[in-house]
Image 1 (tube, helix red, strand yellow):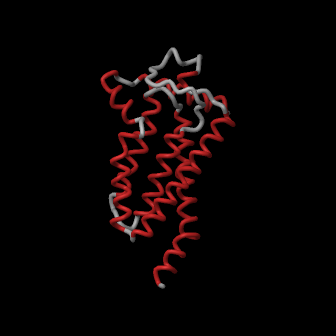
Image 2 (cartoon, rainbow, N blue to C red):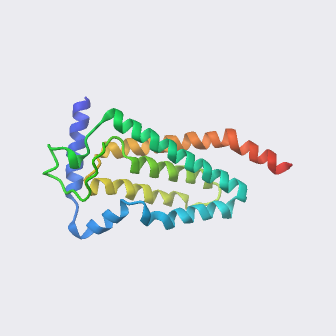
Image 3 (tube, rainbow, N blue to C red):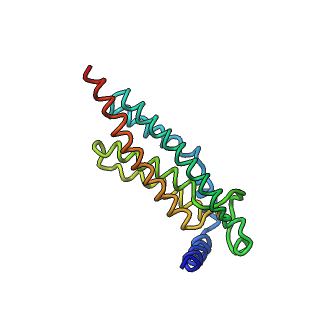
Length: 191
């Protein structure tokens, strides 16, 4: 069963990667980096300060940062434990694919997918009462994760599992925020 899943994963990756068009290389090479998304993060941080008290906004941002640290650690531990080669380093397929980036680390699961989906899911959970269009924020993690196939460094399962790990982590930290931080903020707000 696992062999069939991994075969599907490789075949799907090779197919999706081969859809790449040279004219879009710059776009996907830019989308796959964090710095171009900084204005988006500034927007999110601004929304916290617009919709919540300064104290709440700061604790939400702190929760977000601690979660990102947790997700990064979880991702790195899993990558080193599983030790799956990235497509660009896999000699069986790296001559069949387009490679725009050449990281040397392991592939499973995608840090881009886990971090971006965790960030946006937590943001959506925090802002769910304030914006009808909050789900549009998911455009970022979808593009960010898909870019990893385009540039030749992650298999689809890496992205799917990374996204699920990120979403679960966000849910967990949202619940922890509700249990540990939110009551404390409400208690101090009354005094």
